[in-house]
Amino acid sequence: MRELLEAVADGDLSPAEAEAELRGYVVGEAGRFDAARRQRRGIPEAIFAEGKSAEQVVALAETALETTGRALLTRLSEPQFDALRDHFAATAPDATLERRSATARVLAPDYEPPSLDATVGIATGGTVDEAVADEAETVLLDAGVTVDRVDDIGVAALSRTLDQLDRLRGADVLIVVAGREGALPTVVAGLVDTPVIGVPVASGYGYGGDGEAALAGMLQSCTVLSVVNVDAGFVAGAQATLIARAIAAGRD
Image (cartoon, rainbow, N blue to C red; front, side, top):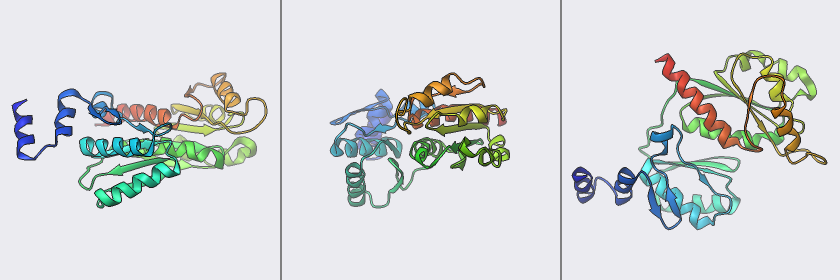
């Protein structure tokens, strides 16, 4: 306790960083940020932007950057991303802002990213699945995992899937993202000896077109795979990260 107080008095530690050390979270105007989640859970807290104002998103990202050196944001709208970009361009021009679809990371200049000796493969059925895959990929990259991604290998032309079989089999963990009837994860899981996480996507039309058919198909798969909720790219990326961490630990 005394060391923390002295560090704050000397200017080596901000009050927010000290609060994060003591409580494990920081209380700000936009809510509580769980700064200790990576240490406790192995996965950092992400800022879910949907339903928040641009000001709230910026405030939470600023807290994350101050206390952990990085901020991970999901489901960003264009106005929210614009506010984020403009804010850090003015207040932290040396910070790095990365974006994949509706997912983004902000990295402090002195942030040292982690590294895991594991590879997670990501496969998508078609172009419409890519935004959900981007969310999963950002989580994995934030954890220091090597990502091997292959897009547009849906089963409508099975040769596209089989052409990538060697790459799929080479991964330690696989995330397979598919909409419509959601057949791709089932097919892939029947061809590899790797843990497969299926991610149903809300694409298609008519009955079951909101991802329900894809979710039901994956849940009823006759091959062994895990399934997350519709469009849950973050959850898939986080689950794959935990598996990758266990694999990397076994290699040490």
